[in-house]
Image (cartoon, rainbow, N blue to C red):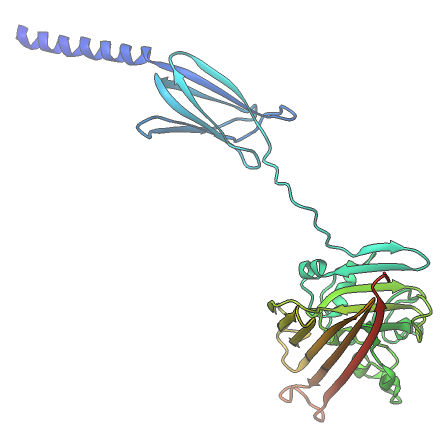
Length: 385
């Protein structure tokens, strides 16, 4: 019996000595985390200690930016502090007694190069805005009317491809299709590589048209319909508000100068789909430096609906362009010759669902096809700027 009590006493004493020894080898660790700029505490910063055996002790800072590890054994640890939007702090520490550290986290700033996503402005006798290719790629437009968002005072709006999109520069009134002041769009001239878009065929008028729903789709006396102009083959656009130089005529409100892509050997493709439209564009350039010849071709297809649930009202656009440019050098002069062949088709259709129509069947169909062949010759001195 005495032997049994002796064994129990030995176990109890050994356990107490082991516990005392363990407690003597553990120490509290206090970590404080603050912002390196304003020295404000960071709430819920993640703090972790990793031992050589990959055992991890972790916690989060409180509202004062502090966290206390109450009992950490002696040894070497990897201290890691992280917080969203800040650079991660790491260090190796050795615990041999009570330990505390004040850590300042630096903001993780991402420096980006300058990006221009609006039109560049120039001020002179008339105000003009220049929209380059980078701004167009940022906007991802469906038609030319989307580019007007980049002008001063332009507003972002959902595309309205089920109706005519006339340009509005220096226009009075509300700009509705029935307004008596909706005439400014007729005074804006569109030039593509120096050649105007002729809208003389849109001077026809059908009596009573203004009182029907077809008015919103009619281009009569409303100038260029910007829905019909694809933007993927455009390199640069300059929009002049007011009356430009005498070089241009037949305008009263402004001018839109469109410069097409020329040269390059790249193949370009763009596919766009949203709730109201689907767009496909393919383009290829060919450049022959020795012969000083540039050839470009592109094709564009747009299928749009005013309401994705309604397949009975639809607008479609098909454009194709083939362009060639040749340069000759004759002494102090350069001769530039360019020829462009373009096709543009706009198709509007609408009909009433026969299953719900109680009246006679009614439908609307409009097709506008424009073919153009443009030739330009320019004689320029090498000293001319």
